[in-house]
Length: 256
Ligand SMILES: NC(=O)c1ccc[n+]([C@@H]2O[C@H](COP(=O)([O-])OP(=O)(O)OC[C@H]3O[C@@H](n4cnc5c(N)ncnc54)[C@H](O)[C@@H]3O)[C@@H](O)[C@H]2O)c1
Image (cartoon, rainbow, N blue to C red):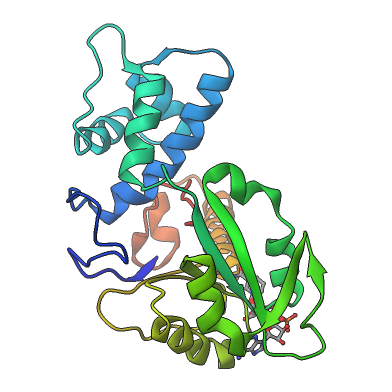
């Protein structure tokens, strides 16, 4: 779901060693491996087979081995992967060895829910600033953070060393907010507004749209219903929908 990811774009610090330019699909699966590995570690497992980890994540084991080979991680024959080591490797590649400060712009219904969510801290992210354009929201305290006016963005980003911006404004305001974030040096944006953002080279944008995910699930529901409705005549079931759409991978991540 990345809207823009120029290869080799420098990060803000520019001080990190060169990392392999991994396939985007691999990058999107690494957080899922990480989550499964943390669960295995919490349950006391020290090693895991590629099949075990693959099934915990819901991918096939060949894909998992290929993904992990990009990290130089091949496991040990007959033993599998060292859970703690693999956690370290994935966290290192994802840049999760440091806590990243996040600014949330737009503190309405969705913004409130995000601001109140405890789960980011344990994954290496700290919501360090809440900003909104509505003066009536400015000054409100949510989870110990006071909402500030969006005009304060340049100062807040500098003070809090913000590296990631989250946009939870209505769609018509989102591009202007993205422009403001970029202007103050933010190079990664997570966009919840249902619109496509235009950003310069070197800025990564990911978008989350639950309505789109629901529409994809709607397709699967529609397809399953069409298969059930087909008479058992021996014809190809996949002709029930236009183009014989085969969708083998029905478990896709939402991309968060
Ligand atoms: N991605 C998803 O799955 C998902 C789910 C729900 C909502 N949304 C989207 O998230 C966005 C927020 O939804 P909501 O229900 O919280 O809306 P909301 O109206 O409750 O909140 C939006 C907030 O943005 C603020 N705002 C408006 N313009 C601004 C600007 N220029 N700078 C800073 N703040 C500004 C408003 O003052 C308000 O507080 C919408 O675009 C909505 O479509 C996405």
